[in-house]
Length: 168
Image (cartoon, rainbow, N blue to C red):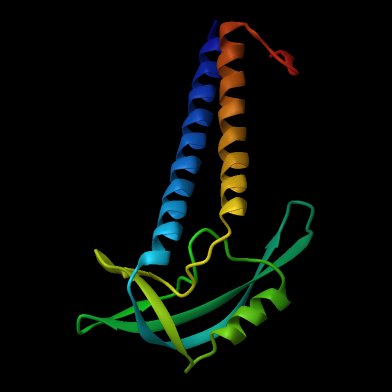
């Protein structure tokens, strides 16, 4: 009797995670699309480098991910702002060459065009282009998987057979 309750609770938790992932992605998609119409000002890159993050798994295998880091400043309405967002919709972190190319593109001292959200000028990007298909696909995979797992747990709690999974 406890197993169906636990499975039902797990199903609800996984469904919740799926909805959270989808809503977070939706906000990035909206901001990414809207940023193409935001006003812009000139800014300056203050700091730029490539950051290396090393992780180690339980088998002592090490993995290194590289990401560009930079800070730029810009002024809106006489107020100076600082930011480090390149664009919406992309998770930063990949190979060293990729990160170095971006850090070089936004080297310290370089003038840049900054696009800012008029209602909150602290929200800004350097690039308004975004890869909508990749963001949507990633959001669908993460959110869809969590909802499917949650739904399977709920079906298990109800004693139903899940197509392709047998009786769970």
